[in-house]
Image 1 (cartoon, rainbow, N blue to C red):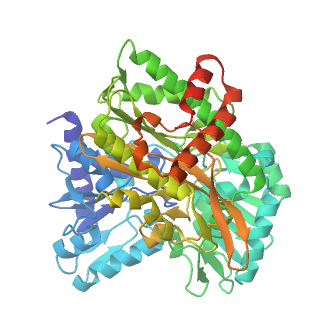
Image 2: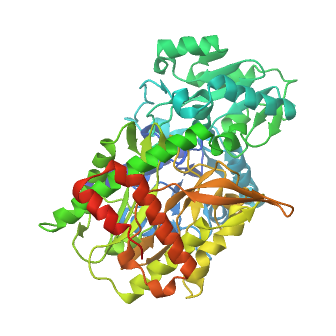
Image 3: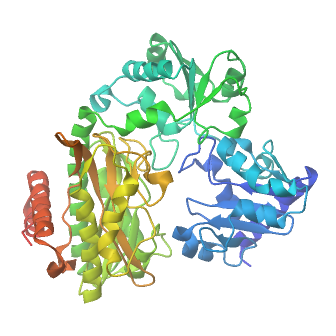
Length: 598
């Protein structure tokens, strides 16, 4: 057994000893942090530390005789590989007859058992669900155990790098204006305080950014907003003196990060505080009385989803820069493939370098998915240095990537033909393109939700009895999280139940995946805009923001309608107009050819 497997055995053994000491029959380790973030700082990557599984979604349950990892279909192949030879067993979540972790604990733990969790890492909603599922066997869920702190001896500390101000010339609104808008809504909801626990909301409200978390320009912090004052809970060493003085002038008090609990305990019991049960940790919620709490959605969630005209103007510039970076990467790849193969990992690095050469760049918005041939069928594939496939001038390449710029966050997927392709591949690519065009071309009445539109992207594939297993699109932040709620195109109510409004930026990314052979995905970011108001309704539509050609070599023109061909030609004219002033020489020649009419 390898040394890494031995280390995992030792970690689980140490945890089980602590469980026995504390009379715990099971211990649950999630992927989240104290803010319910999608991506977490290394300090909170305890699920990866104890299991060896590096995927971004998953949960580990340890008992005295079992160690299990629960994750979904995006990560089955990865988990099988990373857990091979390990004591950790993969439980395939979302598969028929495979119970999720709460049901598994109910069915496998003895009557009257005790489950231990670190309540800082679970929302109050998650804890309530866990308790409800295991209650038929009188199983107790205790939220007071951070056993990882006791067994992870060399655990990384929380980062101390300084925050910086996201300038108003980018955001279009200062903190004072944003706080005034939030307070107006607080008054309407008759609350005296509003607790904000999600890092992107804190960053948006206070116009601050940092690099505490990979891919997300966020600072680890909490905030409480009152009707006249606001409090920011962050390591004070992270706040530059000049910015701290600004906060003071604006009635924003900086407290230490860990002071949040004591602050909540000292709030007047007679005053209402608005919390979001989906994001507040169980530990923080337990500090408030039921009479204090008003449950609802974090007010800034909707506000930050609707981009203002200043933000939209900057996003357009970011998209043009991103298109140039992708264009240079594509030319580099084709030229290099004439003389040698290129690893998927190397291509991801080269693309990051081309983006870095653009102005105001702050890093990738997520780990680039560079999937050559069969790896393209792994939806959340991330190439690693030692295991990457070698790209040749043949077959298909799926490239899903994005950048974080001070003037916008990008996310684009293109599927390229690097050589001859089959008729099946061309057909399936064209079906995906038809679904992509259907969403982009959509005109819809006010109040329409993503769950209503998602089927239009799938309909061309359904006609051939084909489908894909992920959502069709997610909201995108402005120099914030690349996955930003609340809106999205999805088959589930949880992700698709928000009505689209003008100013929302959303991805449009249908796909198709043939396991072991190839993957197809076409993704643009689209902006919801006002269309027409008449006696029947108020209508909205989408506008494409992403600027990069769609590979015509993969298209079966016979499957496209005249309207779809017009859409493609018009889109390519927009790409040419947007990118041609920014490139020259062979890049301009390639771009002009790629954007020619179909």
